[in-house]
Length: 292
Image (cartoon, rainbow, N blue to C red; front, side):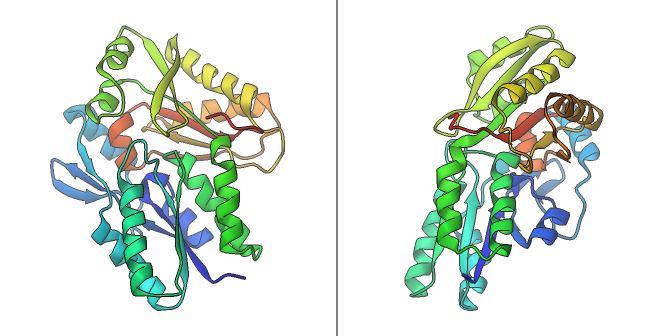
């Protein structure tokens, strides 16, 4: 068995309870609120999603800052010093420079610590589309899989990850540079709910629109029915922007569509949540075939 540590960044939506149970290290992005800088992950705190999104409703979008090279070095170096290798699951390179910074820090450290290996996987995803890979890797590590085998599995399967979501206000994504102004203007029309997904480059693109909140949730459930892997035991996850009742409603729709026993539901963490905004609803699952 390889002796390797599993890392991800906070945009993976891995909460402290999930991180502790799986043995995953989370490196936080930074969110700039009106009170000042705030780490997007705190191992010692439970994220108060309702307070965060209430503030967003009042102030609008806030800025976020990616993990830089120095921060990656600070997180990785104590691990490689102990003789462990590292597997890092990164937020999509299509929407953030975090992956590139991780790779640069990894290259520097591998020169300084010959024999140590730091592998960076660009998941082409965010939120649970990224986090599910870290969770699956932890299961494989527990089953004594070698790090190279886990990396190979992730690279072969990352384009099977479906990530569909809808938002209440596309201006959050537009101001964060995630979608075009035209897409944002279309989505701002009365009661039109955009359906969005990640493309083959890990960028956010439109894949449809419906009228009304309930229809947007039904559309997510329909996409699940069309594309989800039929195998039991696959992780299905929902991230929401302070709308837990709607998340539970969506989970109920999924269970009617397929024999889904459990759906992992968490509030969107603040980094990604700053860009999708209050009311966002996202669904993550594996397809039997590549979809990107």
